[in-house]
Length: 297
Image 1 (cartoon, rainbow, N blue to C red):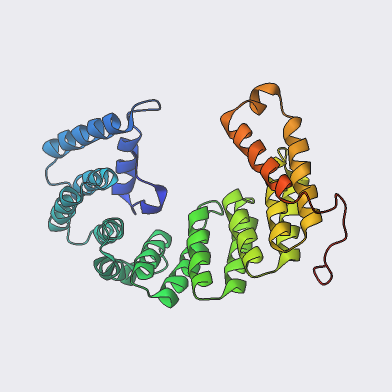
Image 2: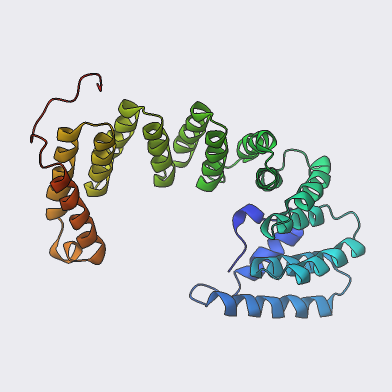
């Protein structure tokens, strides 16, 4: 397992760690790749024991593996060899986030951000730590700053937007959550995870029209429509619009029937078909084409 990009380092040690992480090449089992990378890192350290960046790079490989104590030991040695190496606090802070020590993470990332203000990965890491400490206001502020700090439009990840929206929703600020998701949808090219969360939030707050509008926009562009038609039916059914919900479920069944036989015969397709048939049967007393209940439009 190579380190996720959100825990990338700053400077020479990062490039070295990532180069080593890629050394095994595609197709190599993750644990075997890391084992070889660690052996190579150790060989490099033996050849240049005074190189702090090599210690930091090996610490990152230990962190990718979840070997917290070994990673800390390498970070400590890197700091001893080069007390000016600011990336140590970044790596240490992100290790504390991963290992479930949010207070220590905040302390380390505070030190790093004091020297490198506006560093996107550090801000996202501190946001996660603050969220774990129930400091929602501080976490939201860090998520905002961290997401904005990524110069590459593609660098923020969907989970950054999802985590921020989840915090805002937990505080009852659904409009803020939705604004943040829409920002991510525009920036990242409409990832489905953000779309689904936005639809769920709209539906949960009773904004049926808004939820349906989001689903319909996805349906207009979707090659495979059956699951989104099912989602449309669920929203309509929850809103009491039984006839429309039944029609959506039947449309989903019709879309499913157009799939090639091989796909229709998959376990997932069979499960979906059974769910749709059960939903349609549940609404059998609703007219096939009925007017929506008054006040729902």
